[in-house]
Image 1 (cartoon, rainbow, N blue to C red):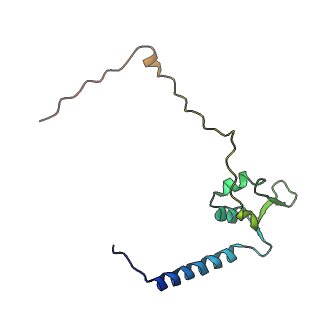
Image 2: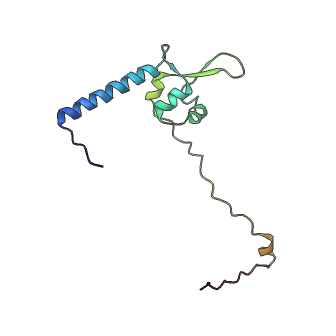
Image 3: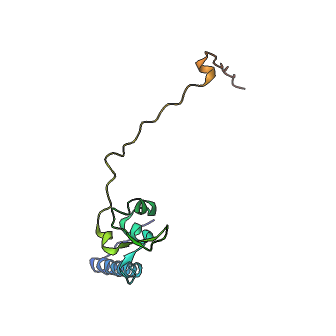
Length: 119
């Protein structure tokens, strides 16, 4: 694969084209009411949808409706906020070693004999 070399003016044109496409996409993603659903906010923050749902209150969730599962929306300016840091109390637990097998604990170990290589 050969490298492509662009002149400064070509590089600037390319950057402008990319910026225009990104601006068009962000306008397409932003609903008329200015509220985003969890998927849209997750894309803007660069996190998973489950992360957005788990941190909904920290991200300023707005519950729409009064049923058992109301729709949740977020203000578009929440996308400018940094994603919440993990809680300090959430520490990784060390892995527990499994108990030794019953035969090893009882002193019975299976011996394996080495095979001789075939010639």
